[in-house]
Length: 254
Image (cartoon, rainbow, N blue to C red; front, side):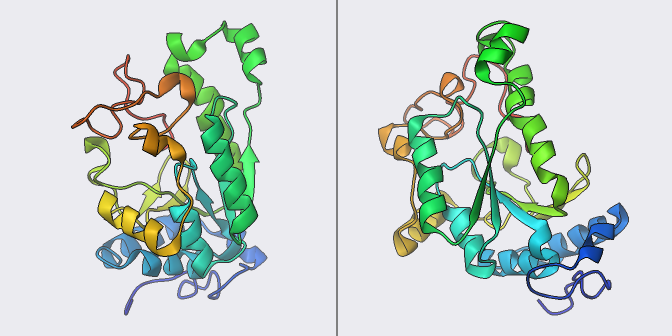
């Protein structure tokens, strides 16, 4: 990583965890500079190197977000940042298989799983917006049960790592390994952006990483149960998400 800018070079934080309190005073401009340069210089780097850069740069102001389709990203980050926070958005509408992966991650990996719930229970949401909002207005349902909880969960961090991959869908084809999330004012790290499904499978096999059993049941991508169906042979892996709507993302990654 010769020449790569870090928070330490900017006088913001020394390498390693935890980050000192002054890291909270980073400006948007400094974070944007870090993201822009790192995205350029880490392109093509191994995923573990990208993860290590993030851990050394942001310390305990870095978290991982995980949908618990598998534990690949949580496992990867735990190798360079033991004890890292793993944020899971508990929408109240997850498959039991997904919750089992969350619990297994919390039990077996050196991470701190934070289950973040929406402000409204599913029943309260039904009372305020009408039943089965996910059928009538999935964007509103995602906003209430995913987007707002994520905004709240990320409040104490400068950066977050996500498991986006370029081969997942056309909308993710240009995902940078490090970018700047303008809407949230956070650095977004995507260590496995350049991985293929074969790379993921190899990592899972090598490290015996937990994987959601729904994949073996024909699901190509896993979200909330009302908005997820099995995919057919040859379909895009995310074709089973919001299949009845012209919707491909929940709003977390735009």
